[in-house]
Length: 219
Image (cartoon, rainbow, N blue to C red; front, top):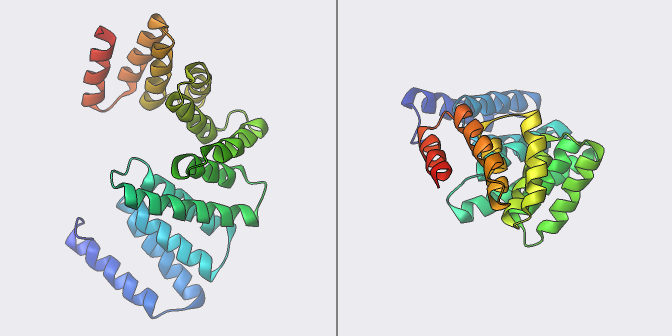
């Protein structure tokens, strides 16, 4: 809370006090207001804890899925590895609870698979879940993206390229084109790599990424 506007911090503290004094449906309503406040501030870790608390009061699929999604956004790109591990464990628990309530839901299965890939010593179990997802829904964005990143990390560049070709079809953004270009580059496909890097640069809003791409293309 130290990093946010004092008046907003006060609103959050006030809501937290009301949550403590409430129960049942009233508590759920106040928790939702609290989650919305944190969403406005783009702070996802507190949202995860709030949705998990809501799920413990009323064990709905939607609450567990939202908790998992919030935890997952939080652990992605987090520099503090011990905190990232704790949030990944929380995400896996939430997604597992969601999957227990709806075994056929692909969002929960994708989230669980992605968390297992990044947060356990057995990433292949997560990969197997993600492959189940794309077998049922070949254009699933998150499953394809996670499989593509794993392929890059394991130096299976041809597989990474196929995954990110699918990703850019679904959601053509700077990040996806950058990973596609990286796959092409490592396969020795220079022209394709340059074209994908240029596309990434066109879509990038981050000047430092644009400069990095310029250096890669010049090489």
